[in-house]
Length: 507
Ligand SMILES: [Zn+2]
Image 1 (spheres, helix red, strand yellow):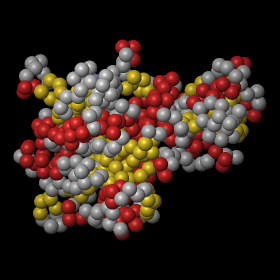
Image 2 (tube, rainbow, N blue to C red):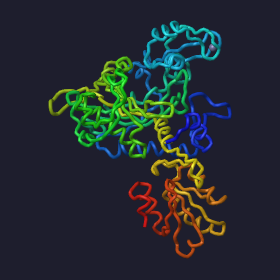
Image 3 (cartoon, protein in one colour):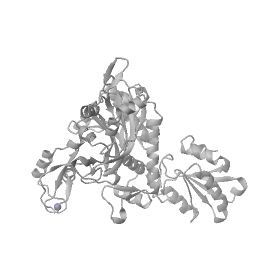
Image 4 (cartoon, rainbow, N blue to C red):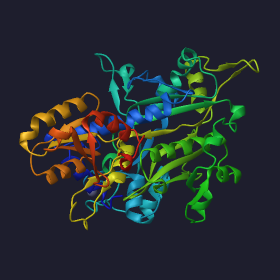
């Protein structure tokens, strides 16, 4: 785990071709980022693994892909037009705009998440808070809607107004009936989606953590409201351990506590099996990709931070160098969304239950949903390793899980004379795996470049290769080396990357 700040991570990501400020030649645009050649590969690998784990390897979840701009009535029904707002505070003198709760947090060093307009106004007056930039007076706080507006069609009018979607969830809800019928789904089931969402944040900050354009990986999971405590998969996670930080622990100023899911349910800290199950599954996904289990905790929302729609919400949090931060907010949304869409669309979105011969509006007890960009940061911080005491390796090693690594293999000819053979090996691997070919500089420099990009395996072609038809393969994490026949290379690399064998098991 890295001891670097978020700003240092941003510098590293730019220098190594992972992430740039968007439109950098024009000075960038706050809250927008472009992914470079290695960033796009890592991001695609994160999304592909998430989809495989959550959709393709399960028989109760199917996918869909909704459009970014949809009928704006969707956002009236969901409540976003009326109340998807933050509190805006503007400086009278220099006109800088601040997000009210962040301004309170930064100046008074207290938690202000979820504070209402009047609370913020009161705190500003009581503490005589001035503009942090110019010490000018602050205007009365205002509500500010976070949706990006746009116009559809050639004429700009009130009826042409539409929005860039502020979340992917509502596209799942408004397609609920079609997907359920087409995929012949029976409760309980989930609908998954990966895609962009947009929020006009007042003050984007912390690099990829709070952007104006971001990507979500989301499941809305539907259950029979009479069976919220009957999860058929609960036994799979009962012995799973996770750090729990309940509302009560927070109010009593205690620390989080490690518990099994069994204890978590038995002590009734969480109300339903389904909610507990999905929190455990989400934790497991990160662990399956090499992130340290103890860096996570699940935190229950306090009564005053809960969203308008939520009966109970738990965040999966990760301990970043800039504090514990939310990766996923998993709300029990009950039937709020489907009921709203039934009301506004006047369509029947209920499911006919064969058993009881009644119509059911399913409940969403859990929505395993997270930002791709935040997950990207977790994997980067977890992988970034520096060992200044190691004289043989005084460079950064990016210990990404091989499944996530942007490039899986580096191929190096020891000297230029060996290039024909090396290119032959390179072209053979390239058919199946992302591979790079590097012929320039001392072999140590080439290892350093590969380590900094997180390439898990490097292959060197030397003079012996011409006789024994074998190459040297080096493991990024241990620097251990083994001799492997070229004929077996493809199969060994594939097994290593898919965690089917360990490096030390290569004979
Ligand atoms: Zn000012």
